[in-house]
Image (tube, rainbow, N blue to C red; front, side, top):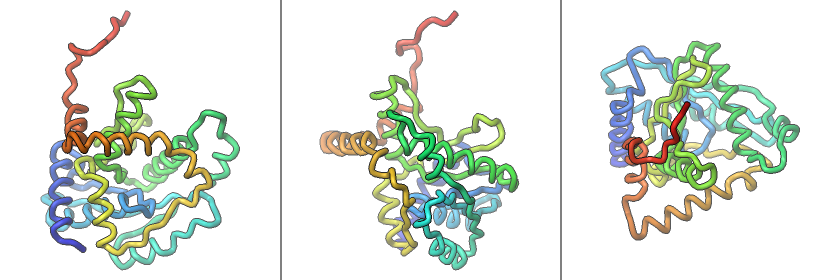
Length: 248
């Protein structure tokens, strides 16, 4: 593990926790562990912060099984056992449902995300976990904002601290200030097993997001801090200077 990188990332995550009130004493936090670099980074950052945090909180990891026979999560369980983290696997048939429900023009990734979210919400509520931690990083926040702006005509993004529509589950995203490049380097230094989702549609759903990534990469050459600037703008909204229609 690269200690300097861990120090930087825990500082940024700690700032996010303080800025947005993400963790409180007595929280039971369920980390959604996909097996990718971001969710592994999130879990280990929360583990490190727990050792010196002024509040006590419980941690566990959960993985949603997509239903694909090629999805092998055994390596995740072995590593989590070494780290002393309980691991829960939620069985599902996401691939089968997507096959049945996917219509022309519907993003398979979007449908999959909604299905996973529903399974996580149900599992967390039944187990008494009051917060679900997701590994979305700064790049995800900015890309989602741009995609909504350019393709949906809405000023909408992710929230670091979101009360779900069901009024019960709370989703937190402590990596909001951390760039994707940092999670990639950190996960590599941890030596954790990285696994894919084994989804047959994974080449179909990410074209617009890849376009947003490429756009931001080009803009960064002229404006190095553009991602942080856009993120800051997402929390500094001047409604009086926007095109807001009069409501009846």
